[in-house]
Length: 173
Image (cartoon, rainbow, N blue to C red):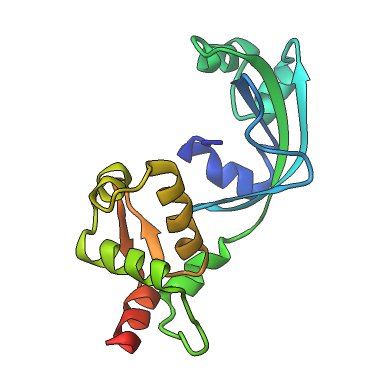
C-alpha cells in the first residue's frame, strides 16, 4: 500500500488515521503491520465501504470527499477504508547502518545473491533475476529476506548493499 509522502508527518502525529484505496482485493489485513521506509504502521481495520464522508476524507488527509474520490478515479475495484496508526521507526534502518555481523550465517544461495547485488547496484530486479536465470517475483522475495536482515537497501531503481551487507561480505573474503 503506497502512502503519499506528504501524509507521513500527519500520520506520525496522529492527524491522519485513515487511508482509502480502490482494490480488487486488499493488500493489507486488519491486525497486521506494514513496514515501510518511513516507519511501521499498525493496520487496525480494513473494511469495504460504499461511500466516504467528509469527516473520513479529512481523517485521510483530504479537504473533501470529492478530492479523495478523485485520487482513486480510474482505478478498478471496491473502496476499502483502512484505519491505521504509526507505531515506530523501521527497525531495519538501524540494523542496516550497523556493521555488526557476528553470528550471522547465510546459506550459499543468499550469499550469491548478496554478491550479485554488490556487483550490480541500482540494476532493476527484473534484469538481475534474468542475469541468473530466475523469475522476477521469487527473486524479489529473496532480496526482501536479505533486506529484513539489514543487508540490502532498496533504491529508486534496484538495490545496493547496506553497510551491514558490506561488512558481512568482508567477513567471507
